[in-house]
Length: 220
Length: 220
Image (cartoon, rainbow over all chains, first blue to last red; front, side, top):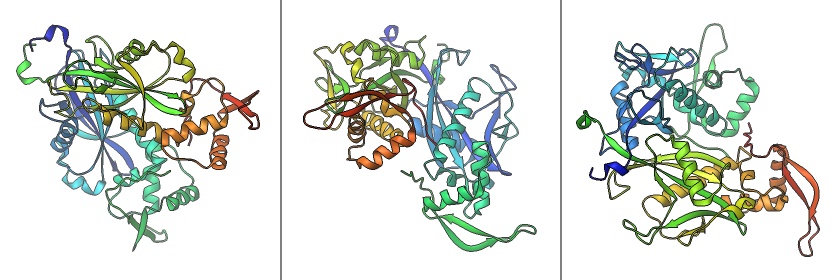
């Protein structure tokens, strides 16, 4: 660190917006802060990037340490570097977002100070984490238009109504059922399982699965 | 810096992929490195982020210092944080890309060690800058599909053929003229200037301009 005077060093952290679907709602995993700054507020899981740790590896580590989940969709979102975002000093946050399918949820350990929150009904958040979550939801919503990313939030088998609910909650608006099904059909990413789901007095609904599980396809 | 032992400090730089169109080609501004590491190789304009400087401000500063250009499209691309990307130590680069319309080019100062290069015919690049440029071109190509971003690379008045050439060079493939014009029409972002451009023995072509200059619109 001999040249420190003319070199700027910053703390580099990563914060991860971990999304899942719970009770038909897009939810984000938050941690309640015990200490100042922002004691009592909720915040994204995150922490400092290790000196010998790539950024992606750091984000995967945050995800695994809070949820025990590995091998799910994880994407770099944006780097937040406002000069006043942390009252303790200059901290640059490389934000990521992760999508956890609800059937991976049994393996998610949630501690007392950790909870899932509806993305449309968030509590008071620390730092600029409200901006980070808003951007992550917007990125996800934008990708619904031209990719199969929503399937990363689905269990192995699901009905088309289930999938429409996921789209609607991410977008924050209802969709026309017929147009939605036409669009899905044109994506060609689903196949029927041959099974049906029976709920209440409704007609049994066909169950579908992804043709290429784990792959996000982009549409021209 | 009392807690330095358990806090990781990294150098944070920003590198800017500055695109323009020159002679119907998408070009990127590169700087030849005088010193090691990678002496003699070409690199992106960039430098360290100031301690009291927001990331966007640092990127705008790099752009202005190399080109004299301000007020053009600038977007954060991705943060590159591989542990071995700089042999001198851990440097995290927040990469941006900028689009400079060719009629802003007269104001672009290019020094002897600075030159525009065709994005499809790049020289040997320093660090991971080849990856950064490739990602910037891909981001731009992806946005052609669902936004009016290409118009940020156009002069004030242009023909539809000019615009098609820009699309084709960014995508690296020819486009069908009729489909291209249909798509443009559906965007509704252009208006005729009432003037025509006459080139050689061809029929004079209508000149168009953006309806909302400076705005990038996204299409659903």
